[in-house]
Image (tube, rainbow, N blue to C red; front, side, top):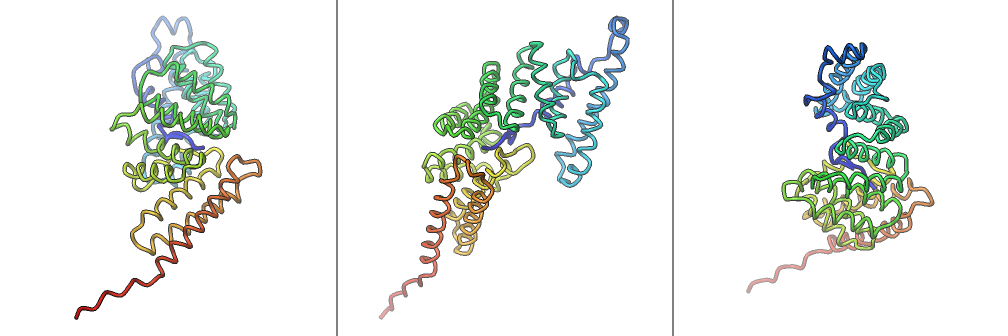
Length: 338
């Protein structure tokens, strides 16, 4: 199962929160004379939030740059400073939903998933407007995924889907929910969820949301016993994203972590079948077998899919050997002309 903000994809909640921060609204507006009279500390809180949001904007720009090592080096420093500023501003109990959403996102990015859950659940208890509730349920579902609380995750996506009117966002929610079903071993619901997600997408949305959904569906089909369907959907995904950037980019993570090997194994297997050059085909098969070996080594003994992974590894090895025999077989001599 994968997540989510190829997201998952899929765009991370931080990006959505930053968009909200850029827009005029309660979080960005300066306190009025009357509000300062009623709450003398309002101006100070607004200044702290504005300062923190400036750090988040810088972090967002850095994440979009090719300097990945600088993101890993500097990004956490900015996020920790933004967290401090938000806490000084009382973000955890703020009546402004956008402030709480951004604060929860900072906590999740810094690895404090339990803190993010507590913040989001607290926000939902005050019943904010529907768009904020939809964002909160979505963010909460992702946190539940990180914690392995898959049943809670599925229910959170149901709550978000009941509030979300936009087709592309609904597609992301449905695809993420399908991942949770797959984590629980409910492969039928997973396949249905992925297919429902794809039916909501227009042709242009396929480039942004469809690629990762096609990959998820490919894995689900494989785990349902349909390897050929899986390979076909990977080929379709690669018509939109030839180098698999979306399932290897920032914002996409795997739950459990060793699931990345299943995606890699299928991806290499599909590449082996499509390769025109014998050397490229041989290398792709070796990479596929190595990915299956890695999945088998990393998966716990109670993993739902471990027996199938072992079977797929053996199948892939047999296919590799048969293909290599055909490639080594000399081509028939051309007939001599008389």
